Image (cartoon, rainbow over all chains, first blue to last red; front, side, top):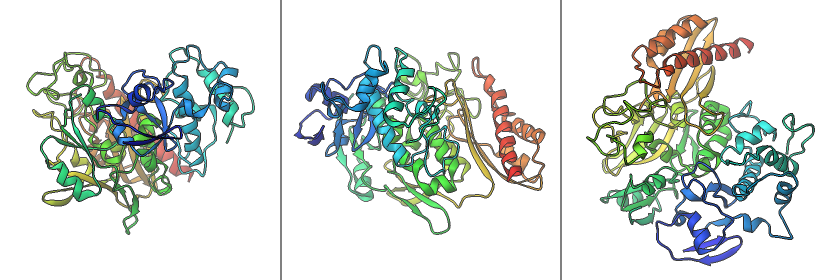
Length: 177
Length: 328
C-alpha cells in the first residue's frame, strides 16, 4: 500500500489490523508518535493526515493509504525546529515531553481549522465569519490532548506566541490570527 | 482483534453488495468500531469502507439540507449553511468528542456508534448488550452516567452522541438503502429502547446502509444545544438539551426539545412539548413541562440526581431562549 509520510513516498505491506500509530512507529521508526491510551482519549498519537489532525491510534492504517501523513519528525528537526517547537522550549510547554509531539501536531491542525472558519463549542456565535484565538478558544480546541504533567499554561503560551497576535496577560488575551 | 478483509466501496451499490456478505460491517471513520474490535467486542470479518462516496452537503430544494452519510463531523459543523440555518447542530457536534475524533468520524458512523457504558467494555463484567442473557452489572453497580428514561431490566446504558440529539430536535430523517430499496426513517425512530434485546440498537436491517441525513427547513425562533458534563470539554453528557423555541406575544408558538445522556437513544421530549405549545412562555410553565417529561423517569443508586438536573437544564435553556427573543 502507498503512503506519503513526511514527504516521502513509501510502499508498505502489513497486517490489516495494524493501526496507523503502529505503522508509523514500528515500520517507519517514527518514534515521535506516541501511544498513550490507545483509545482516542489522550491525543498523544495525534498526526496530520492531508493537513487534518487525527488520532492515529483509532485509525487502521489501511484507511489512510494514499494519504499524506505528517508526524512531528516532518515538522522540524534538531537544529531547525519548527517555530512552535522552539516556542514550547521557550515557554516550558512540557515536563516529561511524552504528550508534546501530539500537542504540537494538534496545534498545527487547530490553526488550519481556525483559518477554515471551523467554530468551537465556546464560540459565542457559530455562524460568525471567523473566530479569534482567545485562550478560552485555544483550551477548548486543544481539549483532545492531555498533559499529565500539567504543563497546560506553558502549552497555551507557546501556541499563542507562535500563532496568536496575543496581547496582555495570559488568561486575559483576546487575540486573533 | 480478529483477522478481517478490507474493501473500499466505490459507490452505494458496491457497498451494499459487499455489505450483504456474512460478517460484513460498514466502516466510517472507525473511531468507535476500531476501538471495539480491539476490545474484541466487535469482530467483523469484512470491513466495507464507505467513506469514499456520499460526502456532500446539498440543498433539498425546499430550504432543507441533505447531508451525505460520509461527511465528516467537522465538515458538518463548519458548513456555512449549517452554521447559519441550523446553528444548534453545529453546537451539538462541537460539544462531542475531540477535534481529532470529529475530523475522523462520519455522520453515518456517529449515528451507528454503540450505545454503551463501562460494563459493556469490561469483559469481566456482566452485560446483556455484549453477551445477551448474562445480566447487567450496571443496574446494581456504578451507574452515575446511566439512563433515567426508557431503560429496562436488561440495560441502562445511554446513547453517547451529541449530534443525534440535535438531529432529534430538528426532525431529521435518516435515509437508508438496502435490498428492498431506499427508505426514510425519522431520526427519533431510528434508534430503539433496550427492552429485552439491548444488543439491538437501531431499526436497520442486515446490510442496510445509511446514505444521508436530511434536515427539513429550519424553524423560526431560536435554538440552543446545552450540555452538562463532569468536565468542561471532551466528556460524555450527564444531561444535554437540544431545544428550538419560538415565542410570539409571550406565547409558545413552536417548541422542539430533545434530551441526551438520559436514555438508550436520543430522547425527544414530546410530553414537555405538548405541555408547552400554545401556553405561556414563563419559567413556571417551562418547569412544569420539564416535570411532565421526567415524571416517568427512574433513578438508580448513583444517577437519580439527573432527574432534578434535567428539569433545571430544560427550564434554564428555555428561559434563555425566551430572553433572546425578547431582546430581538
